Length: 277
Image 1 (cartoon, one colour):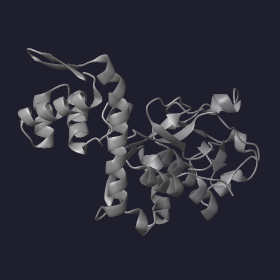
Image 2 (image 1 turned 180 degrees about the horizontal axis):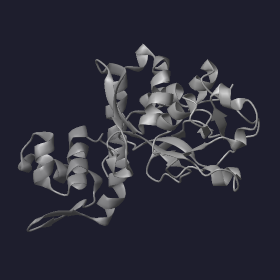
Image 3 (image 1 turned 30 degrees about the vertical axis):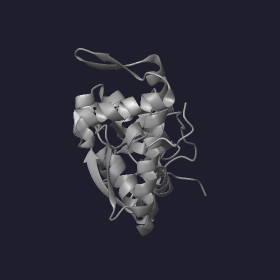
């Protein structure tokens, strides 16, 4: 291998062709000719003293050496692009956050003021109804406990559940009041231990709808205390018991590595993830 520095255009040609599996596709991505890509890859192979591609009648394929090197090259080229964007980019970088309407309304939107102007972030929010609705190119908020392979992951908050209701229903035995249930994977009344008592009379598929029913005095909700914080602080509902249920699962913010830069990910976690008192 030569001691001369590697020209960046040679490395970019290799990375693009290796990632796309084609010199023709790489030429289109790099806005050069197929011959230029082939020439740059040839120069790189001569410089390194190894074959990176097998030339075939209908395209190219990475050699063992090429496959071993490609992930590292892709990571470092991405890092160069991201740091350049962080330092020299103009205007906000827009990110899409896919989450349930409840998480958007009750957790994310109230914390937008914590995004600093110097973070240069703009947002598009996409309401997630089913998991297939996730925009895989953006930030995702999922409920669960992981593992989240292939993603950056940060927990928004530690989940805590407890019964809440309109203040008028807090007088007397609240356990005799109608119960409000919430569909989905999160724990419910059975996990709270309410095996006896009235069956839920109302069932909702979103937390904000269930909380609105509790605020209206329709019954008792086993609520996510973090998501119900604004309602509790305003006195629209009150907590009915001091104990709470703390499941292992919670809401996590996830991003694929190339979705945002390290500095942007730090800005997102600083704004949206609860760090404790």
